[in-house]
Amino acid sequence: MFEMKNVEAVRSYIQRNGVQCEWQNISGCLTYWNEELFALAKKRLCDLREVAPHVAKCIDFSEDEEVMRRHRVRPECVGMMTTQHDGQLWPYKYVAFMAETLIKEGMLNVQTHTPVTNIECSERARMVHTPRGLIEAKHVILATNGYTSRILDHFRDLIVPIRCQMSALQPPLRSTRLSHSYGFVGFNTSDPETDDYLIQRPSQGINGQKRGEHLVYGGGRSYAKYKTVGESDDNIIDPGEADYLRRALPQMLDLGNPKTEELVASHQWTGIKGKSRDNMPWVGRVPQKEGPGWQTGLWLCAGYSGHGMPNATLCAKAVVNMMLAGEDSYDTVSNSLVQNGDLPQSYLISHERLEAAQQLPMVT
Image (tube, rainbow, N blue to C red; front, side, top):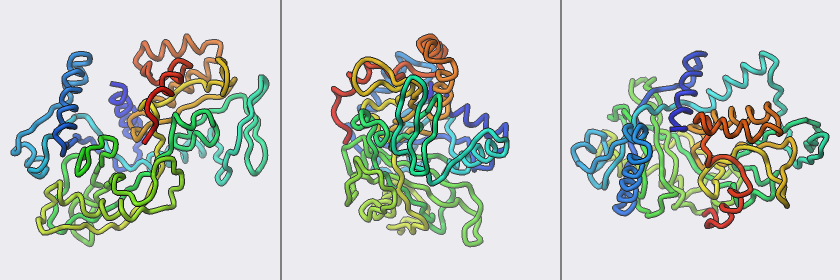
């Protein structure tokens, strides 16, 4: 439900402000290519219908080949789930619009090429160390996601950087635009943590022809030639993942030309996601490295595990509300956020959660 509220918050902001970021209301299609993983997904949906029927009613599943054919999914697929009320956008254009607006209004000061190397906390202030000098602040929010452990060493095994790869693929000449966004789980792998995802940019014409634009496709981590877990360098293109991303889609979707075996990539890039050890974002006060206390004036909002777009907006709003209320009112405000559905209880940072997460398997 929280992710649905995030989608609506993003949609509302874009429509209210006329943000040109290729926003589209769209349905989602999550495909499964492994019997065991699909059985697990169906069980989870049944459980969801028991505890949150208002959410589950937006999700359906099918194993019917004709239904999958209409969704342009190849018959080798074991089954699929469809969701309603989704959206897609160009994230950079969305974020750039907000940053530009705030800068023009004098509400934001962006210091580029100024990496933070350390933060010292005292009762009086937070001292942010950078190569260009010190910045003194009453409060500091770390919205650092996959790079969090560079500043908070005690989160090194709780929010782990993972390098992920993306591609912008040119669709075949006879291809018509896809009507859904897609996820692909268990294609040539039994690891549910290495699922792929796909959206297609709106039709604006390629080479003078009016059809769906680039297929923006990411994943293939199980085919990586290089180490990905614990890696924070996004200047690297992995040749194993790149080859997989060019070849996989024609094997899973009907793209209009059955002879197509490999797509042309016009762009390839990597990015760093912050994988949370317990699969939930970390939102709230930062605990001290040792002991039961908290680091005064230091806040965290990170660890989205690849689900940043349907989480980050309202997570950021929640942590700002906590900060503005002050640490003396932290418990009251955080409890109110949870009770009002403005932040899941499982996202809140607590010492109990830290201890529980450290007992879980390491991120892989």
